[in-house]
Image 1 (cartoon, helix red, strand yellow):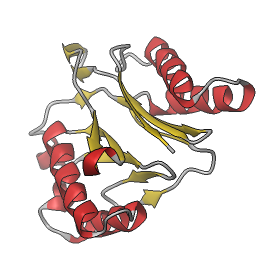
Image 2: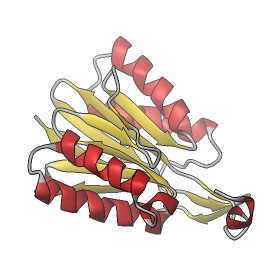
Image 3: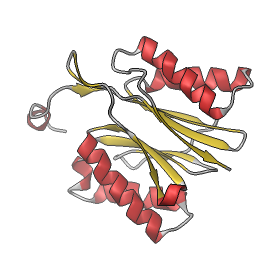
Length: 187
């Protein structure tokens, strides 16, 4: 992004999105905080959605309108490639990177079905985590570390891990709150 383009936008922060897969259950959790500089603008934003008739979950960090545009594109890819989440994500990332309009969109997506989790970015990344846990957003690294530790050392299920890790992230990251949206898929 050029400096002149960046100066047209406020300093928006906020969002922690976490995906956890354990014992056949996949969960995406997202907090509700949106901040502009040091001010909390909204505390109950919904940044996690179900797609493809409830077969796919998606969470987003970044500019809301940009993320929703990308989610709409992902839904179209899922219609084009039913039950092929990886292919739909790769095709979206390819379009996102090469299309003049899409490449200006500022967001990141976490996308999951019952067997896979992917982080999709505008630079062409489609990353599948090694440990069944992925996170994006301002508090993503905090939630990721907590979820990995909880996943390895406890008998908690995927939803309990996600909720506890998001609570930890909210206690550390000033751009994350405890107003969660949690969506779950069973194997």
